[in-house]
Image 1 (tube, helix red, strand yellow):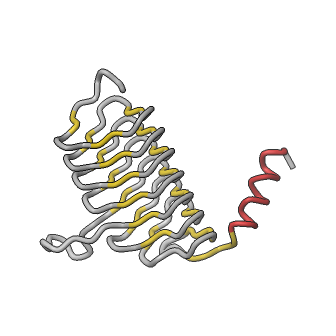
Image 2 (image 1 turned 90 degrees about the vertical axis):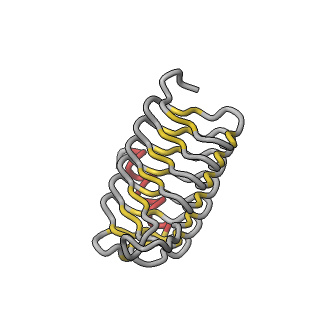
Length: 161
Protein backbone atom coordinates (compact mmCIF):
# COMPACT_ATOMS: atom_id res chain seq x y z
CA UNK A 1 0.00 0.00 0.00
CA UNK A 2 1.31 3.48 -0.82
CA UNK A 3 2.94 5.50 1.95
CA UNK A 4 1.06 8.66 0.88
CA UNK A 5 -2.49 7.39 1.43
CA UNK A 6 -4.20 10.25 3.21
CA UNK A 7 -7.08 8.56 4.97
CA UNK A 8 -8.28 5.05 5.73
CA UNK A 9 -11.26 5.06 8.09
CA UNK A 10 -12.15 2.80 10.98
CA UNK A 11 -13.23 -0.82 10.53
CA UNK A 12 -12.05 -0.98 6.92
CA UNK A 13 -11.50 -4.54 5.65
CA UNK A 14 -8.79 -4.67 3.00
CA UNK A 15 -8.14 -7.97 1.21
CA UNK A 16 -4.77 -9.40 0.28
CA UNK A 17 -2.63 -7.84 -2.47
CA UNK A 18 -4.76 -4.67 -2.62
CA UNK A 19 -3.03 -1.56 -4.01
CA UNK A 20 -4.25 1.90 -3.05
CA UNK A 21 -2.47 4.83 -4.71
CA UNK A 22 -1.66 8.31 -3.42
CA UNK A 23 -4.17 10.78 -2.03
CA UNK A 24 -7.05 8.34 -1.89
CA UNK A 25 -9.79 8.47 0.76
CA UNK A 26 -11.27 5.22 2.08
CA UNK A 27 -14.22 5.76 4.45
CA UNK A 28 -15.05 3.75 7.55
CA UNK A 29 -16.82 0.38 7.40
CA UNK A 30 -15.76 -0.21 3.80
CA UNK A 31 -14.75 -3.61 2.39
CA UNK A 32 -12.23 -4.04 -0.43
CA UNK A 33 -11.70 -7.50 -1.92
CA UNK A 34 -8.46 -9.27 -2.77
CA UNK A 35 -6.23 -8.04 -5.62
CA UNK A 36 -8.20 -4.82 -6.17
CA UNK A 37 -6.36 -1.72 -7.39
CA UNK A 38 -7.57 1.79 -6.51
CA UNK A 39 -5.96 4.74 -8.30
CA UNK A 40 -4.95 8.19 -7.08
CA UNK A 41 -7.48 10.79 -5.96
CA UNK A 42 -10.30 8.26 -5.62
CA UNK A 43 -12.92 8.94 -2.94
CA UNK A 44 -14.46 5.74 -1.55
CA UNK A 45 -16.94 6.84 1.11
CA UNK A 46 -18.12 4.90 4.16
CA UNK A 47 -20.03 1.64 3.94
CA UNK A 48 -18.96 0.80 0.38
CA UNK A 49 -18.36 -2.81 -0.74
CA UNK A 50 -15.84 -3.46 -3.51
CA UNK A 51 -15.23 -6.99 -4.75
CA UNK A 52 -12.08 -8.86 -5.74
CA UNK A 53 -9.85 -8.10 -8.73
CA UNK A 54 -11.44 -4.72 -9.44
CA UNK A 55 -9.58 -1.82 -11.02
CA UNK A 56 -10.77 1.65 -10.05
CA UNK A 57 -9.04 4.44 -11.96
CA UNK A 58 -8.14 7.90 -10.65
CA UNK A 59 -10.61 10.57 -9.58
CA UNK A 60 -13.60 8.24 -9.28
CA UNK A 61 -16.24 9.11 -6.65
CA UNK A 62 -17.93 6.19 -4.87
CA UNK A 63 -20.50 7.28 -2.24
CA UNK A 64 -22.00 5.36 0.70
CA UNK A 65 -24.16 2.30 -0.09
CA UNK A 66 -22.41 1.55 -3.40
CA UNK A 67 -21.81 -2.16 -4.05
CA UNK A 68 -19.28 -3.18 -6.69
CA UNK A 69 -18.95 -6.87 -7.60
CA UNK A 70 -15.87 -8.86 -8.58
CA UNK A 71 -13.76 -8.18 -11.69
CA UNK A 72 -15.25 -4.72 -12.28
CA UNK A 73 -13.43 -1.90 -14.09
CA UNK A 74 -14.27 1.69 -13.09
CA UNK A 75 -12.67 4.25 -15.41
CA UNK A 76 -11.22 7.63 -14.48
CA UNK A 77 -13.62 10.29 -13.31
CA UNK A 78 -16.62 7.99 -12.91
CA UNK A 79 -19.25 9.39 -10.54
CA UNK A 80 -21.68 7.16 -8.66
CA UNK A 81 -24.50 8.92 -6.78
CA UNK A 82 -26.67 7.88 -3.85
CA UNK A 83 -29.20 10.70 -3.39
CA UNK A 84 -31.90 10.83 -6.08
CA UNK A 85 -33.44 13.96 -4.51
CA UNK A 86 -30.65 16.07 -2.94
CA UNK A 87 -30.52 16.82 0.03
CA UNK A 88 -32.84 14.05 1.16
CA UNK A 89 -31.75 12.08 4.23
CA UNK A 90 -32.82 8.90 2.40
CA UNK A 91 -30.06 7.41 0.24
CA UNK A 92 -29.86 4.42 -2.09
CA UNK A 93 -26.68 2.99 -3.61
CA UNK A 94 -25.70 1.90 -7.08
CA UNK A 95 -25.09 -1.84 -7.57
CA UNK A 96 -22.54 -2.99 -10.14
CA UNK A 97 -22.58 -6.72 -10.83
CA UNK A 98 -19.57 -8.94 -11.57
CA UNK A 99 -17.49 -8.27 -14.67
CA UNK A 100 -19.05 -4.94 -15.59
CA UNK A 101 -17.04 -2.15 -17.22
CA UNK A 102 -17.80 1.49 -16.42
CA UNK A 103 -15.82 3.73 -18.79
CA UNK A 104 -14.30 7.16 -18.15
CA UNK A 105 -16.53 10.01 -17.08
CA UNK A 106 -19.74 8.00 -16.76
CA UNK A 107 -22.31 9.12 -14.19
CA UNK A 108 -24.67 6.67 -12.49
CA UNK A 109 -27.93 7.73 -10.84
CA UNK A 110 -28.69 6.60 -7.31
CA UNK A 111 -30.40 3.21 -7.18
CA UNK A 112 -29.49 1.87 -10.62
CA UNK A 113 -28.12 -1.62 -11.15
CA UNK A 114 -25.52 -2.39 -13.80
CA UNK A 115 -25.85 -6.02 -14.87
CA UNK A 116 -23.08 -8.60 -15.02
CA UNK A 117 -20.59 -8.07 -17.88
CA UNK A 118 -22.40 -4.92 -19.03
CA UNK A 119 -20.36 -2.07 -20.51
CA UNK A 120 -21.20 1.57 -19.76
CA UNK A 121 -19.53 3.76 -22.40
CA UNK A 122 -17.47 6.85 -21.65
CA UNK A 123 -19.47 9.88 -20.61
CA UNK A 124 -22.73 7.93 -20.35
CA UNK A 125 -25.42 9.19 -18.01
CA UNK A 126 -27.06 6.09 -16.54
CA UNK A 127 -30.57 6.85 -15.26
CA UNK A 128 -32.08 3.35 -15.49
CA UNK A 129 -30.95 -0.22 -14.80
CA UNK A 130 -28.53 -1.69 -17.35
CA UNK A 131 -29.24 -5.32 -18.33
CA UNK A 132 -26.43 -7.89 -18.22
CA UNK A 133 -24.16 -8.30 -21.26
CA UNK A 134 -25.12 -5.16 -23.17
CA UNK A 135 -23.29 -1.96 -24.10
CA UNK A 136 -24.90 1.37 -23.23
CA UNK A 137 -23.80 4.92 -23.91
CA UNK A 138 -25.20 8.40 -24.42
CA UNK A 139 -27.25 10.84 -22.37
CA UNK A 140 -29.43 9.26 -21.25
CA UNK A 141 -27.62 5.93 -21.66
CA UNK A 142 -29.31 3.52 -24.05
CA UNK A 143 -28.51 0.00 -25.20
CA UNK A 144 -26.46 0.23 -28.40
CA UNK A 145 -25.35 -3.36 -28.92
CA UNK A 146 -24.71 -6.72 -27.27
CA UNK A 147 -21.65 -7.81 -25.34
CA UNK A 148 -20.81 -10.20 -28.20
CA UNK A 149 -20.77 -7.28 -30.67
CA UNK A 150 -18.57 -5.29 -28.26
CA UNK A 151 -16.13 -8.17 -27.87
CA UNK A 152 -15.94 -8.56 -31.67
CA UNK A 153 -15.19 -4.83 -32.08
CA UNK A 154 -12.57 -5.10 -29.33
CA UNK A 155 -10.96 -8.13 -31.00
CA UNK A 156 -10.83 -6.33 -34.37
CA UNK A 157 -9.26 -3.27 -32.72
CA UNK A 158 -6.63 -5.36 -30.93
CA UNK A 159 -5.75 -7.22 -34.13
CA UNK A 160 -5.43 -3.98 -36.07
CA UNK A 161 -8.29 -4.56 -38.51
